[in-house]
Length: 285
Image (tube, rainbow, N blue to C red; front, side):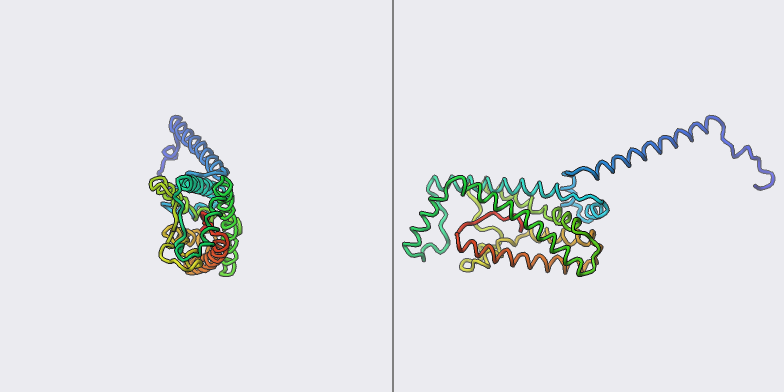
């Protein structure tokens, strides 16, 4: 202590000590409350408040998701399941109503079919107007496609990330895949609004209206739209954040996996559409 300095100058009187004590108590009480709030927020199974955050501020939200230790894929997958079900129900209702009114949608190359093929098609359509074919089978198929697509895409992304040197987990890959697929929620909402306004189901989703005689190309282009591109961008941000991958490796991983999955889905879709002539709602992709 410097010479001539009065030690009493550094001491606090009774009132000041009480103020300091109250400030410390207030700080520790609020710190404990904030900690408990964060723990409760992390422990919530459904975090619907994050849906607009992922769509509007994806990089910041994915960084927050990467810091968490709990899986949070339940929220986006539940939301996507609901939107998928609503889209299928609305489409089935409009299709059934059109069939009752005799407004059956014919295939594009109908005029080139033989009379026997046309008769078989009409008989098949009449036998498939019940609720099982209108609602149940499309709904089950759409939900199975959603959940299986989520598992396969998440697994492939985790496998590719491991090859590129990522340090993430399968849980993190599934979580990011679920959240990054939320643009399909927006697509389902817009499709429902369009169908209700137009009064008929969507016959040529995506870019499938540009091809006519190639089932594989039609299946591939039906999955390509702005919402798929939006999802790919979100996947790149999410995979980079969760797996600590550099941006070029994250882009390569997501693009390669997405392309492979698109080709696989298009091949299977072309095979089934050629065999049955059925069109099923596909939310993933």
